[in-house]
Image (tube, rainbow, N blue to C red):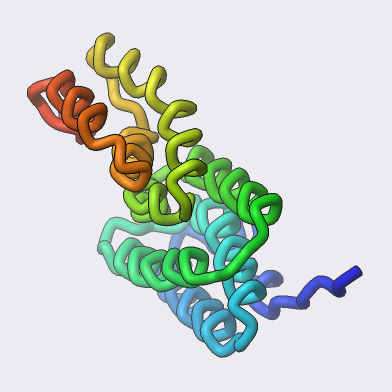
Length: 189
């Protein structure tokens, strides 16, 4: 059985690791973590590190003042790079499904959408058409219900991305026609 990798960043990214004024330190730790993951040569290990960091972002950063936008920028840049590591990693289907489940749980628990790009690129993260199609089916009913009720569903970009990846284009267009006139974004008022 393969030994688990001991990621150095793990000790810095735990629940409530950074205080209210910890933005500068949090940004530094994010950059260090991404560098640690980037230098890993094994693409599977790199993807696993990326997932681990994304799972830990919200719990670690939830109490940090992010009003300046610097923390959001740092996390967005990190997530952009990390998502690509996951997409590029060659995996077995069982392992890939576990990764997707872990990432989905992290996006659902993310209080401020640090992982928004994960949702936007969910179809790519699914990889093949069949996986993307299953995820589209899983998300679609909740999306349609939220639109009927005038609400917002965080999985909207993921569902649309999956339909695109699965090449269910007619279905995607029909679904978009049902979108509320205010678009896909949460209401501002």
